[in-house]
Amino acid sequence: MKFKLPLIILLFLSVTIASAQFKNPKKLPFTWKTDTINRSVDLSEIQIALPKGSFPTLDKPKFVNKAEGLEMFFPKEPVIAVEINGIAKAYSLNILTMHEIANDELEGVPILVTYCPLCNSGIVYNRKINHQGVKEILEFEASGMLRNSDMVMLDRKTETLWQQLLGEAIVGDYNGTELDIIPSLIISVEEFFKRYPEGKILSKKTGFASSEKNYGHNPYKKYDEKENPIEYFFNSDKVDKRLPAMERIVDIESDGEYKVYTFTSVAKSGVINDTFKNKNVVLFYKHGTISILDENDISASKDVGSVTVFNAIIDNEQLSFKGENNVFIDTKTESKWDITGYCYSGKLKGKQLKIEPHSNHFAFAWLAFNPESEIYKE
Image 1: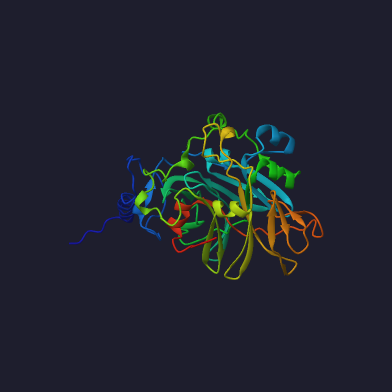
Image 2 (image 1 turned 30 degrees about the vertical axis):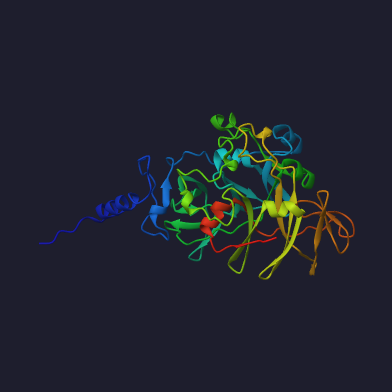
C-alpha cells in the first residue's frame, strides 16, 4: 500500500532542503518566504550574512532644499543624482550605506535607489516591472544576503531575490525578470546643487534614530585601500587579476556586451572620447568628490573624484571633447560643459548631453558577474 504525503508537508520539505543549500555560516534561522525552487543560480552561491530586516529601508523618504542641504552635508560628499523631466533628487551615499535601498518616486516614476558599500555599487532602477505581460510596481528591501559580495535585494510582494548589481531576479516567483536602469550620476553635493539649484537632497532626518547618529561616519574604515574585498564574503582566489580588486570603474553596455573604464584611466586625461560597438561616448573626470569608504569620519576622507558618462551625439552630430582645468570643452564649438554634461558657456549653451546608462563599482565585483567585459586600454 502506498502513502502520499500531504502537499503542505512536501512544500515544507522542499523549502527546508533548498534553504540548507545557502551558505549560512552564522546558522541564522531561515525566515524568507522565497520560492527557492524557481531559480537561475545555485543557492550555494548566496550567503546569508544578516537576518531579514537588518537594514531599515527608506520608504517615501523626506528631502530638503539647497539651503538646508548645504548645512546638512559638506560640499565634497558623494550623492546619486537622478533627474526626470527637469526635476532632480540627490541621495547621499553615506546615508545609503546604512539603508542600502530607497523606494521613492520622481515625476510619477517609481524609482529604486540602491547602494552596496561592499561593492561600491550605486544604481537606480525603475520599480515598475512587466512580468508575464502584467505590469506591477514593487517595493524592495535588502534581504540580508550576498552573492559575490554584492547585495541581494528582495521584493516585498513575493520575497523573490534580486541581484543589486545586475537588477535581475535570481531566485523566486519573478526569476529571470530584469529591472530597467534609470540613468544617474554619482557626483558631489556641490556639483549637484550647482547644476540643479532647485533640486532636493535626501534629508538626514530619516526617522531611524539608531541610523541618524551614524550619518557622517564610515563603518568600513579604509575598505577601499585593501588589496582584496572582505574574504568572509568573497573568495580572493576569484578576484579577476586584470585589474586591481578595489579599482573604481564605470561600465557601459551595447548590444548586450559591456566595456569598463577605470577611474585611473579617465583621471589621467580628464576626458576619454571612445566608441564601443554602436555607441559614441565621452567620459568626464573631475576631482572634488570624496570616498565614503576611507576614513571613519568621511569629511576627512580622500578625494577620489567623479566619473560621468554621456552619449557624444547631440542634435545628430558627434562631438569630441578635451579637458582643461576641470572644464570640458567640445573641439567643434569650444563651448564649455560641466561634470553633469550640461553646456554652460558658448555656442551650445543650454544643451544637455544624454547620460549613457552606467554605474560605479569596484572592479572585483563587476568582473565577478561580467568576466567577458572589455577593459578600456589607454
